[in-house]
Amino acid sequence: MNEEQIRALLEKLASGEASVDDALAELRHLPFENLGFAKVDHHRRLRRGFPEVIYSPGKTPQQVVAIAKRLRASDALALATFADAEVYRALCEEFDDVSYDEAAQIACIGQMPEPDDTTPPLVVLSAGTSDISVARQATLIARASGCPVEEIFDVGVAGLHRLLHYQDTLREAGAIVVVAGMEGALPSVVGGLVSAPVIAVPTSVGYGASFGGLAALLAMLNSCVGGVAVVNIDNGFGAGLIGAMICKQSRKS
Image (cartoon, rainbow, N blue to C red; front, side, top):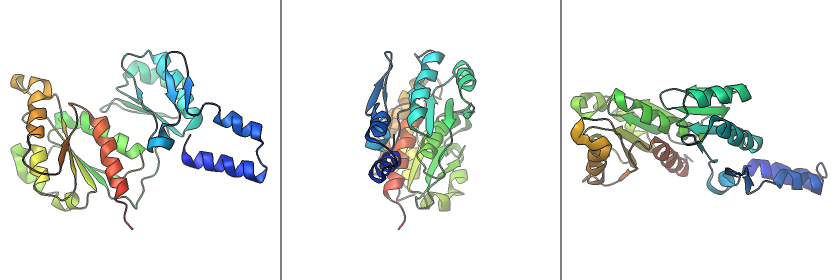
């Protein structure tokens, strides 16, 4: 349940359109609902501005569906991350309004909010095409929060002129998510060009000595450029949410 829904409920109660019993029924599952195998946090959007998201691995498709049903009962949108084809099919059997981003492996149940045009955009960069799946995670999570997003893919340091072509877009950003594997150099380059905060996302893309993204992670943590923060390997979700929160805090007047 979000702030607007609670406000509408209280206004109905104050005007007499809803009874005390009606209000109690609406609030019965606040702040969480116990399903036995999961405790669904209905209070999270009210508390943090973004609803609980279903992490699909380790859950059966039926468990994902059951959690999604309870989230949708109190919110217009539910998200399932790292959702495979089996989870997607199970969701489609239960809901009519499911969309699926195969690259990001995110299922959206419900309608994405319209972007807030008073919020500066989050720019999401990928160093290579192989990093796009993690970059798309960041994009979808940010858009789910109502943040406008600009995507720029395959602009890594092996061809730096490709990145420089987009300097005007970078300067307009409220924050920038930079997704890179291999040696993880791109966030430092971007951080040296812009005044916006940079959220660096190391990916597990790379050859043997990249150690599944550890080389990129360490390179990003050791960036000599100020204003670069780093999330965990392949954590597009975390980067997209942090980036959206930063952008929304700096809304245009």
